[in-house]
View: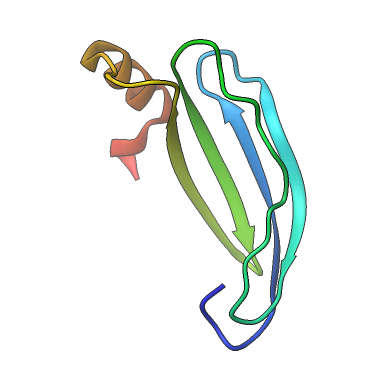
Length: 88
């Protein structure tokens, strides 16, 4: 949190291929602070994780490539299409 006010919200991380929720938790971050809301084990293979989170009334979205590189372009494109990242 790079602001001078505390922020609260919630976060959900899910595996793009399976749809399985890996982490879901509320959070409160102090002003100009940071926190750890949970831990996700390193996957045995490669994966893309979808990250949906809200801070106050703002809803945000991101993604994370999990596993050891290099990643195959065909896998990245499949994950990208599944998330509809180019349609926002």
